[in-house]
Image (tube, rainbow over all chains, first blue to last red):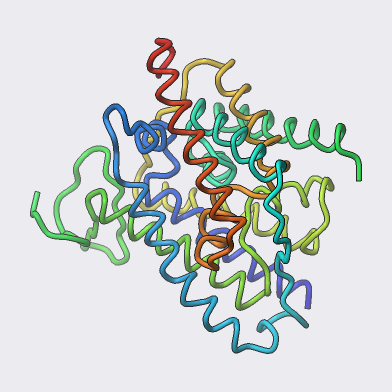
Length: 139
Length: 168
């Protein structure tokens, strides 16, 4: 079961990575252009977000009528509802790094195959940030 | 260039990704059409994860899972998804002959950005994929708050860097 899940996961990851490369989201300068609404705004990312949300919105409607996913015993979905300081502060800190470097986690990892040297530096730093969070926030 | 929305069949031009699904036929789309197509692929990847594996296609969560920093999906599934990202991007590079990217020249900006993105996505339980695509399409209030937060923060950061003269 897990092997088939992993196989499907590899396919989904590859489709995701190809979509990132196709869409322009793998380009940090373009991503910063999208955030640069007071400068030379690049609207491309709004189309990327729209393109990604449409099939997902349909999938959520289908999901509600499925008893279980195709390759797993049950759905494992986030059920947290709290709007707390962690959610807000985390989003603001993430946005700060996103604006500085023009990279969020998906494109950064996909860029390992497009522009390996700077992508690897960013991904290693991102891993460091995740470890840092774990160190000061032990479960 | 033909002012046609979506796909256009035409000769190569620098800076544009080309797809050659069969020899002799070069299909490429100009930007924002190509952005929309790429977005559809990202969304379909999320659909496959949700309806196939019953899970959210959230990159930061799965990256943390691979590193053993978080629970969640079976580790082999998370690792397969994460490895797929450069695999798919690499395939587009092979088919198209190259994908244009411009990174900051400064090592310091890459490291600072990376640490903040890693820390922030863990504290906020998600990034552009988990909150921005999967959560928004699910109409999750949490994800709406998070997405508004990181979008606003990103916009302010880029504007502040412009004012401070450190834009790149």
